[in-house]
Image (cartoon, rainbow over all chains, first blue to last red; front, side):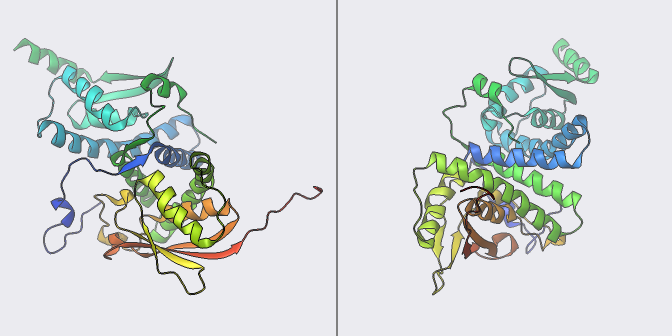
Length: 147
Length: 186
């Protein structure tokens, strides 16, 4: 979506990025999320299409979240190594999401950090997220280690 | 249809945490509105769809609300207004709108929202000037009240996203819904 500019500068860009003080209840989020899933379900004919649609919605969320979190937690420095980005996700992102089902968010964050990867969800004693990195990423990481 | 994430809850001990930061909520709502704008051709349709989804949420939210708050039956519309503003909004969105502008007949009032977690960092682009971004809220209020036998009309009178200073939701009491017993019940 394009941003509308008022008098040459958007007022929104002036606002600070510190953590908002408002706390929203978990059930509000759960209700919204389940309604979104139902909406997608009514428009698709297969489970994989449903997952794709949800993943699409998650893309935008992940991209925005990445920007905010990196800005806030690390003063704008992004991770370049695989292990570090995974740690970043584990600590910061998960903290921000509070354990919500977030495989689509993780994929978006990984992709936008320069780690193209495929994230899938497996239900097995809890939700496990399998992150499969593109070969290029593994190769790059190896070469970084070699330095 | 309810979606449950029982295993997630066990793994992350989310059970005691009733609140979460509003950012994820804001972003998720934004993703929804974006998706709807792609799926529907014009803003009016998106508004209607948001309202409908809000209604579905409201119908379920009221049960959650009644279970979690110890609020009893409201005796009149004024009490209802107070409960909505001071208890419900606080519980779900972490804000407390003010109740003002009562009509002389006492059947219509306004909720003034100084802040709205749904619209943090949101701007409407020029080609969506008819979009009532927070339409979901109207549906939620309407659906929830219908489940407690009140038919109301809910609409946005002012919207900060469209240039107003505050966001004002106008609520009008239409009528009490009589409980319909299924035929054959004595």
